[in-house]
Amino acid sequence: MTPVQDHKKAAFLEQFSKDEEVLLASLPHLQASVKDALEELEIPHRRTESWKYTRVNKIINKEWKTGSSNAPSSNSLFPNWEGSRVVLVNGFFREDLSTLKPEDGLVLTSMKDASKQHGEVLGQHCASLSGQKEELFEAHNLAFAKDGLFLHLNKNAALKGSILLENHVSGQRTSAQNRNLIILEQGAQLNMIVAHYGDQEDPIFSNDLSEVFVGENAQFTCDLVQSYQGEEQFAINTIWANQAKNSRFTLSTSTLQGNWVRNNVNVRVSGENCETNLYGTYQLRNKQHVDNHTMIDHKVPHCESNEHYKGILYDQSTGVFNGKVFVREDAQKTNAFQQNGNIVMSDNASMNSKPELEIYADDVKCSHGSTTGQFDEEAVFYLMARGISEQNARELLVKAFVGEVLEKIHHPEVKALFGEEE
Image (cartoon, rainbow, N blue to C red; front, side, top):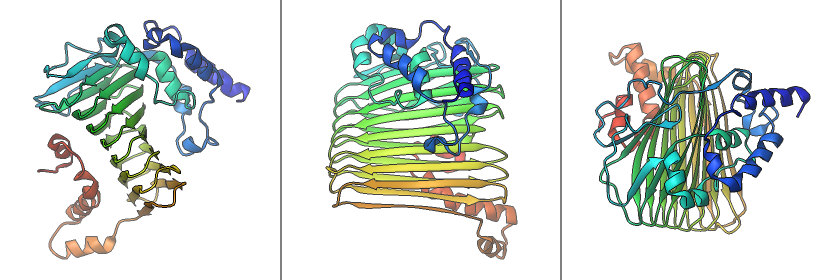
């Protein structure tokens, strides 16, 4: 690291170092390693392969402050939600804004309270998956997160309905570091919607990290929705998941709006006969930038993974997709599919796509691919010749293109955001 970079990092971290009551205070076994990581890790730059197309200088060079837990939240995308609703404001669990419906086998509380009431579980699981020793922003989250969601679902528990988790970030130059821990014991089933909002148009920096443990024969299904309204809003959303045998993990990511969004999804397939599904869609306008980085690590045999991301890029927007699938030497009989498709609607828009397979086993079925191209004008002409206006023709074709991914969304409330109906 150069002296200039070292100075920038020190100035960036100094803004958060005075924060008190961080979660790390209840995790003494992690404190030394996090401190070392913050000192040693570099700011990602253009020679950092995983950050090659996503610049972080606009985050590092700005002044940030920890947001207030009492800040107001914006309107929800799901105002008529009838199930349990968990609201986080600037990274803090807001019980007064949440609606929690108790169910057998479910423990749902703030990470702050969990550190006092479920300290042993927190100590065993927190930061046991994430990459705080390799990634600066993950170390940053662990060092300065104050709160988040703690969810523990007991053996064979299946909730009657889904849980909605809403993350609001608001306030001038607000930084929010929240950390979530979700644990599904053997045979448990959980469906969730996770929504991220950049309230108003305030400059914000959201650094959100979740660890998900999917036990044996358990099923976790999540629809992730992102809506960041302002031009100076920066969001890093990181998910780490671990699957025990015979489990299923499904995540659908939909970026509705986002000036600068980085999604990191990492899944460790640690048990046999697992199914892993990652889906994503993004429709970018103006100068928006969205970077989807995924990793599925097949460690054992007889597992299957499906990964499909599709995007539409308008104006001067930029997109990044980097999906990596590892098939370890012992992971025979693995089926892995990965595909990224994009339509570039403007000469000034650009897409950087890099699907990757790294295979060390010889008895597998694996495929990957990427397509990026312009709109099919012949298809537009075909529809217009049948009495459909040009605008409607283009909208129909866009809907048809992303429809293959949208149909994988689990909740009808999320599909409705795209005009999709059951």
